[in-house]
Amino acid sequence: MKIEIRLFATFREGRFKKDVWELPEGTKVIDVLNRLGIKPEEIAILLVNGLDAEPDHVLKDGDYISLFPPVGGG
Amino acid sequence: MLSREQLFRYSRNILLPEVGVKGQEKLLNSKVLVIGAGGLGAPVALYLAAAGIGTIGIADYDVVDLTNLQRQIIHFTRDVGTEKVLSAKSKIEALNPEVQVITYNEPITSANILSIIEQYDFIIDGTDNFPAKFLINDACVKAKKPFSHGGILRFWGQTLTYRPDGKTPCYRCAFKEPPPPGSVPSCKEAGVIGAVAGVIGSLQVTECIKYLLGMDTLAGNLLFVDLKSMEFNKIPLKKRQSCLCAKDPEQIILLDYSQPVCDLKGEN
Image (cartoon, rainbow over all chains, first blue to last red; front, top):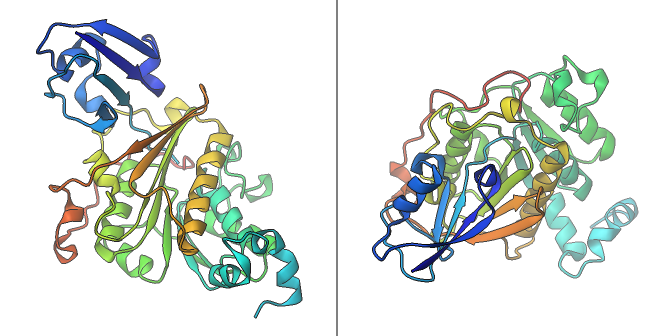
């Protein structure tokens, strides 16, 4: 199945802005995070298809994941 | 009744059908609290004052440092070493003498936040660390006060607006807990373009004014702004049933998380 990954802000550094991966059925968000080298605790907002999701969310063909880091300065 | 001078001063507000004389009177009778007189708080306080928000509260316990001047546009070179609240007050008064400024030269903690925010119609978070942002959220949820959250780092910023209507997701619905201390680079470590603070601060004031005028706001969404790639992402948020904002407000216990993310002086 095809999964689109959209990264924002610091997560793009050394990676990419947007990419489409071919992944086996049953792949979870956490598997994608592991391959990206991003720990769940580094993520402020995790979305699947634009909606709030957890790392154990099981992905379906055509899903897109968006990852945003925390931004807390002032 | 607006005076002739006020009709001129606020004419560009009044011309807007969404504002008018009635709206301007509402703004003049409004009280807004700005927590943090730093990167975000500086443009926020100036735009609030220019717009004719009648009473502006400013809370900060820091003094102006040379490294602040790159972005904290309410403070000038001559203010280095001065308390930020006093520096901010003098600029607001010079810009718009009819604004009443109330200063709080003290840390905002779980012990004093409720008694301070109680006196205001809208609260703007201009703080530079996650513990303060969570405290402001929790206190505003508990006291049923609307607020605007803002955060900046490097080329990025984010903002959300909380409306105390029992339906709007809060900051904690989106972010749950402060990230572990040290896991997110601080402002001092990572830097920030000063104008990014201006963008997010301006968005926060726009939200505040719209709220005070009874207009729709960003409430229910997070706006994530990437000024490196010039992307604005409006992310719909979901109210979490497990979040403290779903509880009886009486039962909300305010927490002072021990370690700020950006706790070095002169950094907000």
